[in-house]
Image (cartoon, rainbow, N blue to C red; front, side, top):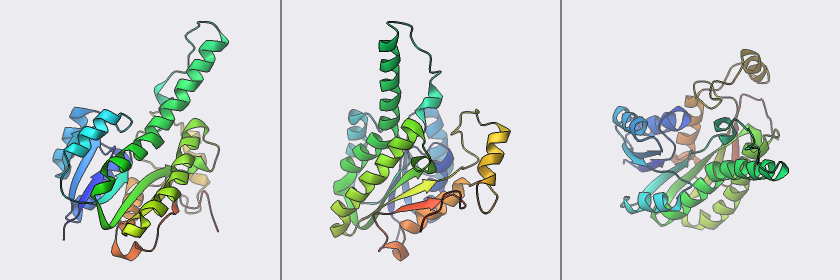
Length: 247
């Protein structure tokens, strides 16, 4: 039976790959993104329904929720990314230290909004639609374990919140897990700032000596939403080729 799936931040990269995997499985998929034209193209190519939404904006999230009907079987909180790449980090030059502190605060809040608040708001908004046997899957990062600055801190907070969420919704038969991604090629995460040397270093840190691919995360998400994963909840699943190991 076809499931109803919502994937945020799915105009490209990891989110698009995840949406494509669920669509290929015959599920009805809704995707969100902030760029209307890019979202439209992705939705058309995937056979999905696109909704323009900034997950950190409560009004837009409420509008997204209002447009959904029926039950929701899978929610993938993929929207996010390192917002530090969107800033040149320059001070506005006004009042020295004050300007620097204001810029720092804005930078940290931007990453928290993009990577934590967006997931919290979206999950809360659609929570009443989540059906028994459903899944909430959030996309994290190896940076949460490796000193990733404000981005890593936001994703670490995402994992902490996920543990709370799992306990909150588990009795309803809904699971909640984080997929923590290592270096994934084929996305625009680094905004073209990744040097060849840095790329080689990231690959060398893996055990299988290859970069991750969006499909690696898509297949993991599809499994976590499957009947075979119903007793997996409250977990952070590391998908990084061994670059960070747990025991």
